[in-house]
Length: 191
Image 1: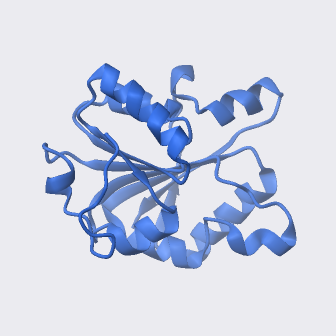
Image 2: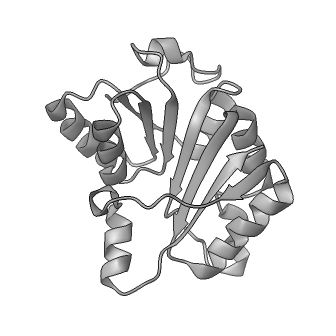
């Protein structure tokens, strides 16, 4: 399930990545893969890509996916911003999941936040018409930042977030909920 592109400088050919031509969903920063594994297992008619920088996390998800025989799951070790800006073909993704990204809470680090104008422009370019971006965070200030960035972009319409079963929770979400923290969710659809 670990996937290495033939060329790191040209857009991916989804027909080479997956055997079946089903809608593509990308989990940016998939971590230990709890949500990703659940999604791929419960939605076999969709293709899922998990993205993370840490190889040990991806290897763990890979072992679990191989044991489960999931043919609709691929894993990429890469920075999310590079993937979306350079490797994702235009209008080819049905859904992005951005679940509990690093909030970079210190003001001097806000420039490192994933959700920003250039990133959203690339997300919009790569989403199919009507494509969705699901976001979740436990950090209220970052949630407000995310809301403002999507509104400033103008290429998205906010809709009601989907309620997922507990088994779809990420490890971060379980940790935050156990600590009594509130989880903030938003769902944006490409105009």
